Image 1 (cartoon, rainbow, N blue to C red):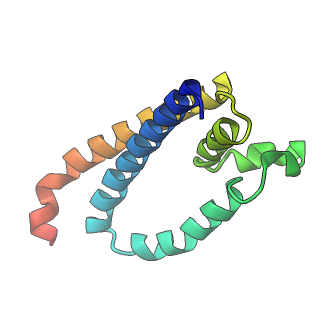
Image 2 (cartoon, rainbow, N blue to C red):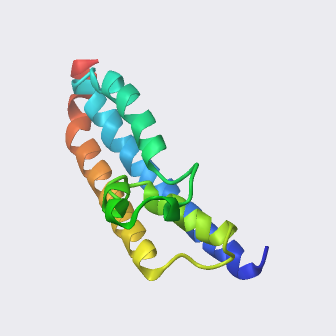
Length: 125
């Protein structure tokens, strides 16, 4: 693995950790008030996993369905890892842009919602 690949992999992993942390903050704050979110997530997470191009390359999906694949927020992460690890190339500028926007949005909304709702946690729990 080259230095360039290590830098790209570190950047991608950092973006994924931040995006996941934002989603965790958002969902944990909402789950205090809406307890059914855990049952809904049990249904949604397998669908997210199987619709992301993790187990298959994106080029097996017909071009007209690519937009449906990229509705899944983690499809861009999977494509980024594929390009780094399998193609020995940096992810495309579009993929990196989508990931940065996704990460900033997830982290920003997670922090915002958690801070707004945390004052009532003790009352509800």
